[in-house]
Amino acid sequence: MIEVKNISKSFISPKKYPGLKGTIKGLFSNEKVEKVAVNDISFSIGEGEIVGYIGSNGAGKSTTIKMMTGIMVPTSGSCLVNGVDPCKKRNENAKNIGVVFGQRTQLWWDLPLSESFTILKEIYDVSDEAYEERMEFLNKVLELNEFFDKPVRTLSLGQRMRADLGAALLHNPKVLYLDEPTIGLDLVVKENIREAIKEINEKYKTTVILTTHDIGDIEELCRRIIIIDKGTKIYDGTLEHLKEIYGTKRSISVEVRQYDKVKDIAFDELLQVEKDAYETEYDGEKSVFTISFDKRKIKVPQILSILMERVDVKDVRIEETQLEEIVKQIYLEQKEQAVEELEAAANE
Amino acid sequence: MKKFCKIYLPFASNELKRQMSYKGAFYLFILVSLFGSFINYYLWMAIYGSSGKATIGNLTKNEMVIYVFMVYVTSSIVTITLADWVSEDVVKGSVAMNLIKPIDYRLSLMWRASGQMVYRFFVPGIFVWIGMEIYKVKALGMEVVSPVTALLYVVSSFLSFLLYLLFDFCFGMVAFFTTYIFGMLMAKEAMLSFLMGQLIPLSMFPSVAQKVFDFLPFSSMVYTPVMIYLGKYSGSELAFVMGRQVAWVIFLYLLGSLIWKKVTKRLVVLGG
Image (cartoon, rainbow over all chains, first blue to last red; front, side):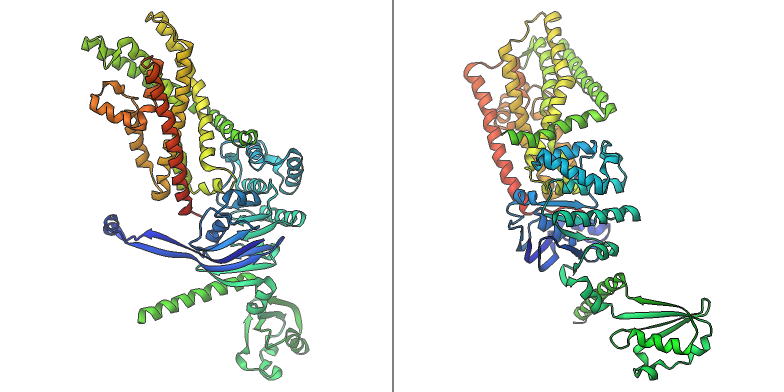
């Protein structure tokens, strides 16, 4: 459905200098700075997939989306969406896609929502029957009729986002790009939007590409994720696989009556592992003992049986690393790497 | 063709609705714009009164009355500053939302402009026009305008409308390169009101300046239709000035397409 091959985009902008003096200097200098926003990214996405496209702020997510929608021309590389090159045949591509940019609206600001929908109906040449059917469905999943006759500028953010999503889906696009569709929304609306995306994907086999900073969106919607950082792809695969690689940390918290007994357990001897293979922690106030470890080295049942045998356990909680933690870890790693590189460059 | 209209007509009708959805602006616009014309009118009357000449720059005092109000009617329907919309789209980055739809950006802007043109034609254009005709017959004792002249004026005004839009589109494209053109828009407005003959009839300029104005597209924008209305052109001259309008429309259309092609290649969408 979508084929992206070695796509790159760099922006050239005049060099800016700091301070007032710098601003004046900037007026006369002709130096240019090249900033690479997207660097040699390739991937392909099949029909009906929901792919989460994530990365820290300024990683190049939106730029990639803009290139796939045909509103930006890549510096090099190519992409094909449903067999059409979006940059060369923007109009043809536009008929196949629906786009929601969370921070913008494609609706007519001053007019009632219904007007925007009638315009879109004409623009995309949607037949009356198809329009009826689609509107019925959209009303069901997005509850548009509550505010269908209100001017768009009076809608709340949640309503506007639902309206925008509806507008992007009116012509039943084959590919749906969602650029931060849940930004700034409350939990209930977020949940509704996710449900709607899921239903749309199931009913119409719409391919969905989703960028977001909300891990909840990813966990609930995407089976596959692509992570980019500083314009380079650093991960492309299933969510489970990512959790397997990075989310190897487990922790067990037990609420105990007597801490003395737990304290004396020599886990390293019992499990025959190094002492630094695990970490223990005790919260005296709540009398909770926590032990965290790598699940590849130590198995959860092993620890549990040791604890159960020796102490009187009131409550047990087992935690695996949250996706949020994983993603944070990845971003941080990348950042450290970059800092190291910078330092290395500076030393030279 | 039918499908084409169906797609773009909503842009016009929506602009019309948008114009009317702000009631305060609706009434204020009529008031303010008429005010300017009356100031112009009294100013010219004072000039004619104190100069003692019967004609200034080829126009009699009565013709000047018509000139002032017809310039008002014409420029209110012709000068729809589409470049404002382009610059707003670029600065806010909302141009992206236009580009993701299977529509031609320039055409959608032009249709939108025509919605505004229709609005301006009725509010208050045509009433000023009719009022002026009544005044002309009753107070100045002149004959009512002939249907042929009125028709020629309408056709020529329409050409002016297209001409202005196409020019403004090319001008607006500058926004894509500089990302900010507010100052330039102001400068353009001031320059144009001069070059189009909005402030002073072009016939009052020295003949060298008039030659230069003839060469530029701006004189075809407001001055030409008003002069047609005044019956200053006839026969081959009339054909020539209207032909010149058509030529400019074609030229600016092609120029606009060329620039647009270049622009989309290096488009930078701001924000987000």
